Image (cartoon, rainbow, N blue to C red; front, side):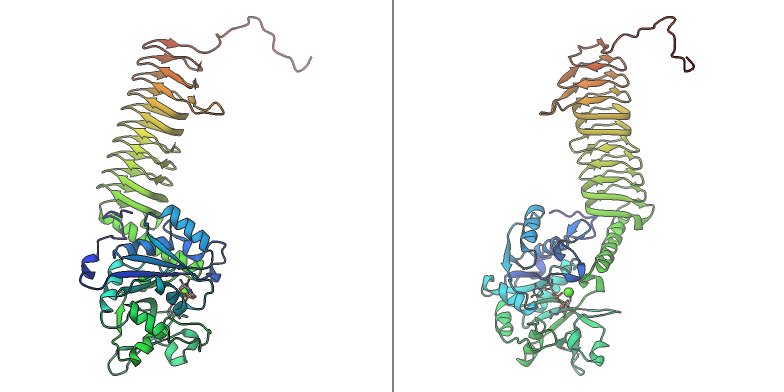
Amino acid sequence: MPVNSTSASNESSVSAALAGSKPLEVVVLAAGKGTRMRSGLPKVLHPVAGSAMLEHVLRTASQLHPKAIHVVIGHGSEKVKSHIGHTCALGNVNWVQQTEQLGTGHAVKTALPDVQKGSMVLVLYGDVPLTPAQLLSDCVQGAAKGPALITANMPDPAALGRIIRNADTNAVERIVEFKDANTEQRAISEINSGIMAGSVEFFNDHLSRLSTDNAQGEYYLTDVIESACADGLPVTGVLAGSPYEVAGVNDRVQLAELERVFQAKEAEALMLSGATLLDPDRVDVRGNVEVGQDCMIDINVILEGEVTLGANVEIGAGSIVRNSRIGDNTVIHPNSIVDGANVGMRCSIGPFARIRPGSDFAQDVKIGNFVETKKTRMGDGSKASHLTYLGDAEIGAEVNIGAGTVTCNYDGISKHRTDIGDDVFVGTNSTLVAPIQIDNGAFVAAGSTLTSKVKPGDLAVGRARQRNIEGWKRPDKRS
Ligand code: UD1
Ligand code: CA
C-alpha cells in the first residue's frame, strides 16, 4: 500500500531503528463491541479518511516490518475478517478469536500461543488509528529490559487509565483505571494510551498473574506494569507528542474529531507540496494524493484512492477525483466526478461532467457539462461539449461530438464498441448504435441514427427527410 511523500501518514521505513533487537510480532486488540458507536458495523471498521480504523493500525504496524501481525477479534469477527481481506493488501494477518471479552489482558493472552518464542510483542488497539510508526518504534526500543508503554498528557483525560509515577524517581509504577481511581489519581493528566511492548516471555509470565479483582471485573492488561515493578523490572514510559497520536475512538463524536485532525494534516501536506487550497478545512483526502506545483483546489473537493495531479491542475468546487491521473494544466470545472480516469495535459472537464472508469483522454480534450464517459479513449483535441454519453468508445484526434450524442453500447445482453477515427464530425443529437465504425474525416448529419459503418470522408445522414405540408390547417380550439 504505497504512501507517497505528500501524504501526512508518512511511510518512511522505521525498520532500521529496530535492527539488532528481537524479532517483532504485533498484537492488535479488536474484539470489543464498541457499544457507544451504536452501530451494526464493528467499531474498528468505521472509517477515518475512507479506510477502516483497523486498516490504519495495520498499515502503521506493517511499517515496522514485524514477523507477524495477530489481530484479536470477537464481536463481528466475520465482518472484520472479510472487510480487511477484501480491502487491505497487507497479507499475512493471523486472526485470533477471543470468544468472550474478559478484558485487555485476557485478549493479549489469547494471542500469545501464536507468538514465536524469543519475540518482542507490541500491543496495539484497533480503535487507535493515528499513531505514528516512529512513536511505536520508540516504544519497542524502550522495551529492551522491561515493558514499555506509550503515555500522553491530555487536557481532558476523561475515563482513560492514569499513569502513576514514583514521587522521587518519576518512574512509571502502575496504571490505575479511571473506575478504580480515587479523586487524587483522577486529577492526573498523564494517561495510558494502551500501547505497550515487552518480550513474549514477559507477557506470558505477568499476564498469568492477573486477577479480575477490580471495578470492572476484567483482566486488565494495565496491571502488568505494577507486577513488573514488583519484580524490579524497569518500565519505560514513552510520551506521545500530541494527544491525537494515541487518541482512541469510543463514539462517533471522537471519530469525527480524529477525521478532522487527519484531514488537517493531509491538507497541510498538500499545501507544503505546492498546492493552493482555497480553504484547507474544506478539502478531504481519502487515499494517497500526489500533487504537482501550483495546483489549485477549490472548496468541497474530495480526493480518493490513488490520485496524481500534474502541475497547474485546477480542481473546481464540489468535484470528486478518485483513482485518477490528471495531466499538467488541466482544469476540472466545478461539480465534476472523475473516477478511474487518465486525463492528459491541458484538458478541460465539466462543469457537471461524469468521467467513469476506463476513460482515457489524450491532450487538449474538452468534456463539457452533462457529459458521461466510460471505457472511452479520446485523442488529442477532441471535444464533447454538452449532454452526451460515450461508452466503450475509441475516438480519434480532433473529433467533434455534438450535443446529445449517445453511443448505444448495450443491447440488453452485451456491450459493443464504437470506433470513431480522426477528424470526424458527429452532428447534434446523433444515436450511434454499436458495434459501429465511423472512419477518418466522416461527417454525421445532426439527428442521425447510425447502424452501419461510415467510410472515410463520407457524409452519413440517418434520419427521415423533412416533409413540409403546404396549406396545412391547424386544429382550431373554437370549432
Ligand atoms: C484501555 C486501558 C486504559 C487506557 C485505554 C486507552 C485497560 C484495562 N485499560 O481502557 O488504561 O487508557 O484503553 O484507550 O487496558 N479489547 C479486546 N478484548 C477485550 C477487551 C478489549 O479485544 O476483552 C479491545 C477493544 O476492542 C479495544 C481495546 O481492546 O480495541 C481497548 O479496550 P477498551 O474496553 O476500549 O479499554 P478501555 O476501557 O478504553
Ligand atoms: Ca477504549
